Image 1 (spheres, each protein chain N blue to C red):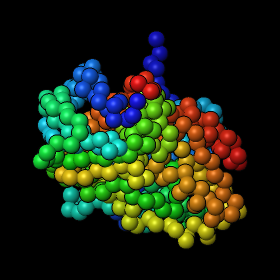
Image 2: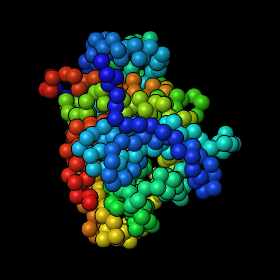
Image 3: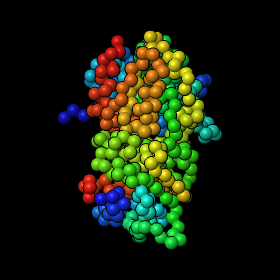
Image 4: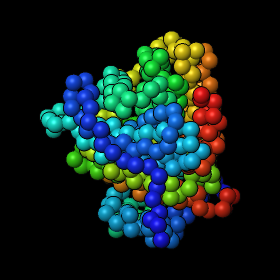
Length: 280
Length: 127
């Protein structure tokens, strides 16, 4: 019997981000327009495994999901032990553009979730001409914090377990239990302080209020989709953001939370396939 | 049945859940949960409730307290809670619940406590 192989293939790419050598892990599948997928804070590219295995997507798109440095199978750069990890608007933007350059992607579509959705908004603000379309999942220009990130990295609390337990509430009650716990497992596997470092971008450095109104959707179409059970990036946060951007398309996803592509891939498909069909 | 009467069933709900009992094995703490205006004082040890008392208790100390309105717990315990009422932190973010005290034991065992507080969701509505 032939082995039951998933269609995606994983590789490492060597590149420089802001002059620093990195080795990033990514998975890809399909042919056509490049579609780069950005995972949520404290997680990795495995969140897109269902999209990478969906023939309706991979027949038109070359889907690529990379692990940010410090995440998944992308190791931190040499000397990481000497500093505290902190993602910033600048470093996140530089990482995405470096990946697209290194893979020689021509006018890619970028889809990101949560912090990935927030940075997609920044790509729309600052680099729209480089992209064919941008899709922001669970994204807003700003959202109100709902816990103290100091608890995420300290010696008397297990980092993986508290990260997973906190975000567990962002998953919709309708999501299949196996998918819910697969989502949480990835959170349990994050490196120490990495989720907290990602949230530095989310909470401190990545406030895009006032900036989103400059987005030109004629230059690059922008789609925003948010799950109704996401109370971190609440639907009202996304709707408020979309209302400031002429031409942005926005949709609330019913029975979905903060991790649509991995917590309920079947439901997410109903929402994302029509969006992808619009991209030419 | 008022929400506090549903919470009153917690000891039997926990005793019937072997998985939650296993996951709570290392938790040892005295804490307080307010269901509307009804305080409950709970003790945990070895995965089981070592004490469970309803109503005001004289000079009782608690490591931490979780307080929610009747509306918060009623919606939280629906079989499929509505958006924004489905998680402990969704309740605190909207101001329908609060958490205070020494939070270390709570946060070291957060999924256990979340699942413990959600147990009354298993009771038939209106029971």
